[in-house]
Amino acid sequence: MSSLAEGQPRQAGPVRGRPRSEAVERAIVEGVMKLLEEGVPLAELSIERIARTAGVGKATIYRRWSGKEELFVDVVRSAEPPDPELPGTSMRDDLVVLLESLRQRGLVSRSSVILHNVHAQMKSSPKLWEAYHNLVIAPRRRLGMEVLLRGQVNGELRADVDIELLNDIFVGPMLLRSVMRPDADLPDGLSEQIVDTILEGLSPFDPENLRPVSSPTVSSTAS
Image (cartoon, rainbow, N blue to C red; front, side):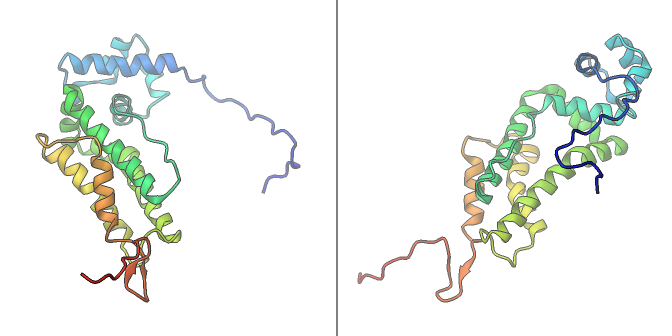
């Protein structure tokens, strides 16, 4: 527990190392992109070559990234759409935003020759793929499961559903179309269609009439 009194300003701690420069980091990332555009494979991109292209020293790169793997992950992330901010209005709305972000990444990857080639090269490099998985894929996956867990807590989702499995079911169709079927359409409205189709069968049930709580009551009129 902090010993500072409530409302008392916190003293800034000592600053270690040189301050980060967004301009320098951007120059380094753009240097990597330039080399990739020239057709240099990831395996042949040394820190020395990247530093020379970006006009900085090797130490400047190592102060910001522990190695090539972390640098390459940041390069890929800089070329992708940014991670979305969830509206937080409902589980359904959050899921739509997450899937829409995945759809946008699929569109960007299709239109970017560099991203397409880099993703393919990353999968052939265990260290690089592990870094990308740990820094990008795993956090996004955790976020999806957090959204589903909140949905269970809020009564928007049945409590007996396996969250990890359900997360795979939600992202599966979009990943299939984005990665495994590059000829498949990724139209506007696909995110909503996937989410609504899956959620239709996952709403909590009213035990008295075994109908989803969110479903409208159907009047029993004679045909």
